Image 1 (cartoon, rainbow, N blue to C red):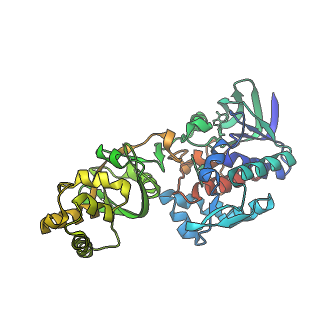
Image 2 (image 1 turned 90 degrees about the vertical axis):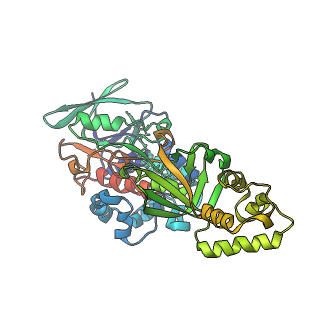
Image 3 (image 1 turned 30 degrees about the vertical axis):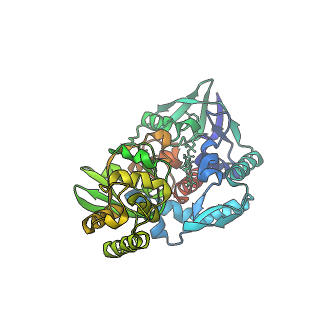
Length: 409
Ligand SMILES: Cc1cc2nc3c(=O)[nH]c(=O)nc-3n(C[C@H](O)[C@H](O)[C@H](O)COP(=O)(O)OP(=O)(O)OC[C@H]3O[C@@H](n4cnc5c(N)ncnc54)[C@H](O)[C@@H]3O)c2cc1C
């Protein structure tokens, strides 16, 4: 049976980082990757541009992005921080640039450039990349991984790192196998949900505005009739519900909100009700005798939203604006500030950017990524119960945990 110092299961962001780190320390390292090529999901990241970390410099703010589980990362980030990531990327030949929302991207070449740089490092340090090698099972003896079984062989190592990713975008190879391996080694897995994912609504009229992108809107979250959260930014209607940056961000919290959950969309968040009513009246005066209600709507909302607003409003679309009553103006203003949608669940893992849930963090040493239950087992990346918002936070988990898991402890 072929033996390695370190055997990494999964050649994604976390596995590649762990491999480069371990091999640079002189270890004999192999990656078992079930796909023909490594880093398939990495190539998709940031729409091919790879938003690989975030420039937020306040560590407490950075950590808060991961919710309650974020505190697990203090130790990892103190050993390999987001700014260490930027330095590391420079070292492997990837210069970076900061963009909106402190997102950090490669200056040029995007995800492919990042992947090529990691593959170069693997070559430089003689990492053996075993492509088309699907790990099927872990064999454990006396609280140690004894060997692993793949679809065509068996391998053993002094140290094993599970870096198989989560369940999101399974076409890239992340089909949740790592959870099964962790369980074979005695670990528990917290409940898994798709996260950073579009949301389904009860209302089917959303499809009237499908594809409509909205900027600078506010989405209020209403649980059992009470506002509990909000987001400001970009949103999009889909055939089955809503998507876009603010929806994706909220989606990660939806499993926590049990009860009657609604979204209330405010199309005019910078205007008070009174100012909006004045604005509508001004438009009516301007177009009196010349416009119908549908024309008035067109002056107030983006073109591809008009159909939906006309559907939701009780005012007939061909009503001349001068006949619109004060009550109708108030109702129309109220609609623009509160379009209600009942939340009807999340889209599937196929559409999710990350997985919420994973290997129980209580069973992993935060300063080494070593299993507390199995002597020679480590974890890195999305397989752990860690997930953050978009903005480079999820890849940062992979770099830090991968680097630490690959270090010699
Ligand atoms: C469309 C999209 C865009 C994204 N954009 C960003 C972004 O811009 N910034 C950001 O921070 N995050 C982004 N993310 C999230 C980020 O890409 C992931 O969090 C990250 O890639 C996870 O890395 P990983 O190494 O843990 O797992 P993965 O990248 O999923 O890698 C796991 C690897 O393990 C292999 N594997 C699985 N099971 C087995 C097995 N049984 N045997 C052998 N190999 C196996 C898989 O084939 C895969 O190659 C994005 C995600 C998606 C889907």
